[in-house]
Length: 167
Image 1 (cartoon, rainbow, N blue to C red):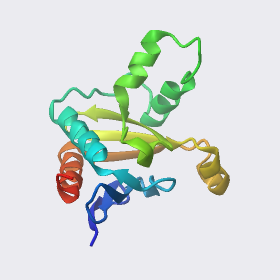
Image 2: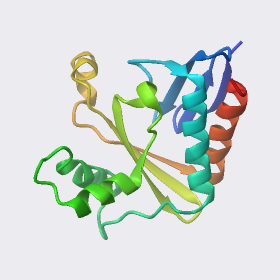
Image 3: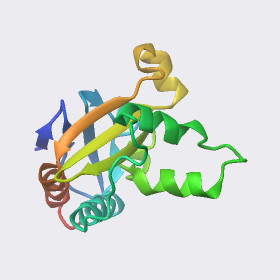
Image 4: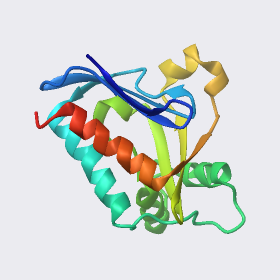
């Protein structure tokens, strides 16, 4: 039996039967994020999800870093020099500070950033894998933006961890 948590139009997760490997499907902004690989190694995935929840509870997350830029424009700016050998260390550290959904192979087909505006979160994401973009050309170059209350997002993360048990 699987468990579905959240709203697929904002952020949702569906976890299958717990075990060492488990199917986990994720959605954000109405997009299926785990379309390339939905099999999670549960101990690692669960720890990563709980680490994200703890980071959000600690209030270490930050607001949009560039005054006057929308969340979509901020995402594009952070992506601009990603992987560039000449990228300044400060740019790398800034981009790294906002990265989210770093949960192993299930989410490595998307680049996602999270920004905190008081009690709400803004998550931006884009798909980068060529195979995905060939089959979904409408998503090429698109940045998807989700706004969700921080408490709701943390609740979904904790629910995922609980559904996966202590495997």
